[in-house]
Image (cartoon, rainbow, N blue to C red):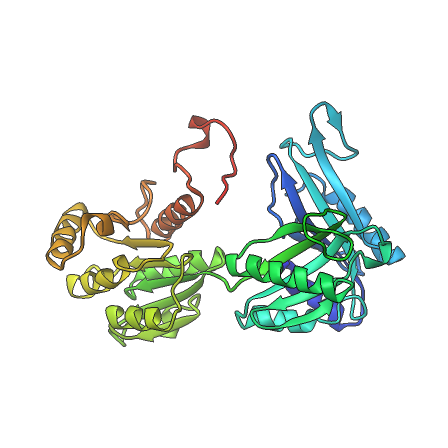
Length: 373
């Protein structure tokens, strides 16, 4: 929902009703993951996507029907074995899409949810998508780290769903949960889709150079909260890095150590060292490579610089296992030359490591195109 939140909130604030369609479950190969959403506004405009175009037309019609009737619907689209559904996915996958009317009346907590997401506060939306009692379909529970609002129909169900939704939120995962009609465990008459909105992952870019500006732009496009850090105030300015969420003037190793102490680094964080100067990059890498949890650590430099840097890191006491976590030289071999091309190379390597991709052309691979985390 994050991608369509601005349009959804615009309709909500104007007092209108929008049709919100959300991918809640995927099977086999599917073009969009659970949580992908599409909004149909009262004027007929569309924001977002649930299938990359395969079933958008049918979902658009369903959204309009749901807004008119006020009744949510759970629909399945795809191809299974030899039986084709009314609308097929060209990829051969199956997706379940839940479509609901969203207004001030049906979703009074939307403004607060939007504020939590904007402030990087974790929040999960648990919505009943299937239930023996039709009046319970569409009810929702809003779950924060230490808060809970709304209801899925009963105190017992709220307790069960609230606990499970908080667990999914901590993991940053969206999924369908099953219960008995009143939240009983080990039963399956009630289905609840939990859409987790964890804070966006961070990218820390050390070295305020032209390559850092291109990388900040690429990372922001991919959804990262970007921080650029450099000890030289003449280079580390907000004007030079408009796509960064913050620009910090500080020695890289000191800043990173402070962030670690504050608990601001996690397994999704990407650390990119572009300083080209051993007095900056070696100390910050000493801190980074000793972290137990970090998503990616890469450092820029030539082959000669790489060899010298690895020697310095060994002298600083880092082990081979610790240094094996380092992407050096940074990025995939795309033949990149310009800062923009290099930024794509770095982003491609981060994506490949996140999803365990090979980095090879798809024409040289077999099996599923989309990888599991």
